[in-house]
Length: 137
Image (tube, helix red, strand yellow):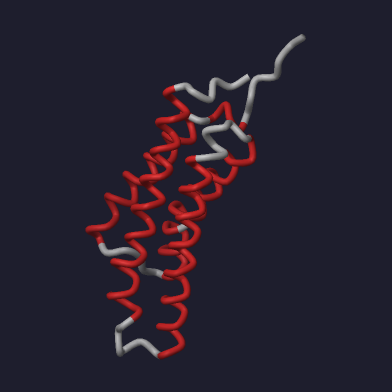
């Protein structure tokens, strides 16, 4: 049985919420002004960045809700949602930058790395939600 009132789980939950909010805000603050309104981009490319930004905000808000409710109730599936968010929401920037030959400006590399470390720490703190110890009885 997992202690759902434990400090580790509550701390991990808030770490996920903060990262989800930061990533949603980053998508709006960075994505739209830099690309969505850039007249040098074709209309269809601007459509895609606008769509991607809205999708990212929705994804991040969903993750925040899952972190606050089902994760805190130690529902096993919620830990897997957090893992997916960590890998595809944050870590995917690295292979995308390598594949496309460009990536975030240098000023954003440190916050991205710190954010990923925060997500890894939150996954470790909430590990027993995803991999509960079986009761012997």
